[in-house]
Length: 194
Image (cartoon, rainbow, N blue to C red; front, side):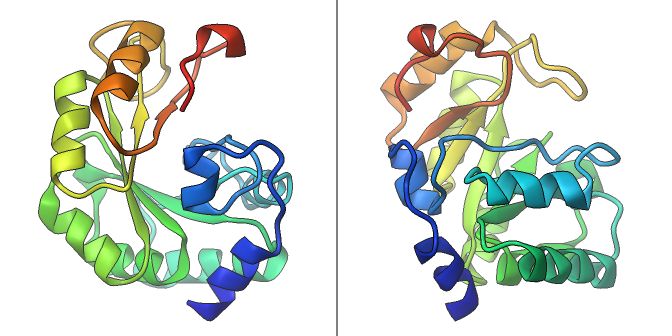
C-alpha cells in the first residue's frame, strides 16, 4: 500500500474534482477495461497522462493478473485499477487486484455488498458500472466509493436503460459518491459536474 500511495502523491491535479481527489489522479478521466483493446501500453499511457487507467481482468488467472498489475506498477507512477465482469469474476483475482490497484471496478451484474467489502478490505476503492438510477443507488448502498454511469449509447456489454446524459444528471443529483460517465459524453458543457 505505501507504493500505491507514493504514486498518488507523485501526480499533481490538472482539473480537481471529487473523482480526482478520491482516486488520486490528475485528470477526471477513466479508461475502459476492455479485454483485447486496453493493452498494457494503453493502460500505462492513460496512467502517465494523469487519468485512472483500468487493467482488464476478465478471464485472467490470479497469477497472470498479478503479473500484469506488477508490470504496470513498474511501468508508471500513475493511478490504475482493475475491471471485472461479474459473470467471469474469479475471487482469487479480486483479492490480487484489490491488493495492487487503487480501484476495483465491477460491471454486468447487480451491486453486491460482499464484493465491495472484499475489495475495500484489501485496500482498494470499489466502483460499480451502472445502467440505471436504481442500480446506482444500490451500488452506493452496498458501499461503493464511486459509480460509472452507462447509457444505451455505450458499445460492448450494455446495461444502460436510458440515454447517458439524462441518466447521469439524475444519478449525480441522487448519489453522494462521485459519478463518472462511461462514454459518449461529448460535450463538457452538457455533462453535469462530477
